[in-house]
Length: 337
Image (cartoon, rainbow, N blue to C red; front, side, top):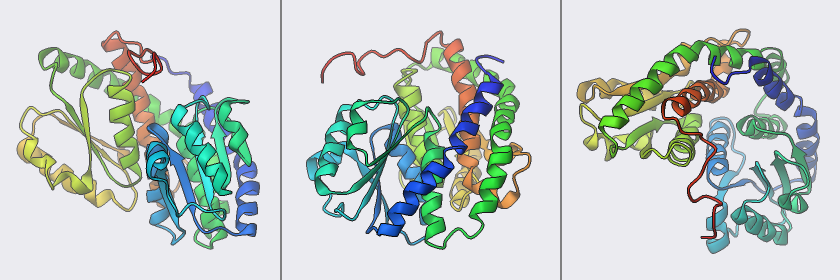
């Protein structure tokens, strides 16, 4: 299969799950010392991953768990971030300008900072009280951290059983999702290429909800816009019926993601509506993919990872169909702005 190294994928997720003891030690220390709130500081894709994590926590706990956008924090600040707060962040390079400035400002408040940075010895590391370096798997790292806070708050009684199951089965199960989605993703990408040739200025609409909403927003912006240079609009399923539905017609390209968390009914409502007005929609439902070894009641906590695995296959085939390497940029980090 195109650009799919199953063994490497399995080892990547396995390695991320093996970070759990380190994450637990840090979070347990935070909880022992007390805190007034937990914040995820992010920008772009990392902010979107924070939205997913917040949705996960909100459905399970009263822990004050908030998302802060780095660029907005630099201008408006947030007086709720105090010397008793916990700030989490994730970064690939550790050099994003807004994040460097924002975390320098956070450090001045006295808040305690846990950073996940793909690379070691970066500019952001100096602001961390704790730093864990491991590549990729950002959403998994955030969810593992949030889950430990839930456990310590008494809101995740089967935490140990859950993670035993994830460690035993999730890496291979997600690789199997990619394999299962590959043939469909190839056809999807070919259809998109043909459509874009005929309709180069039509935006593609992406819809999602709950723990999938942040990923939907990120996929539309950070992948199709930034990396493939295709026009998109993302909209949450909760807001779809308050404006966006009026712009959908028979030919509008729509992709709807349906996960298995508490907000699944919001996406299902959109799925019932679309056939009435549109002939050009795609529904990607995590329920259509097996997660061998993982029980039904746990799927809602990882359905966003199922859909990410599907998107991995879409990416590989979109890159080939459009003859467009996703690593190139016209403007981002090419000059000062």
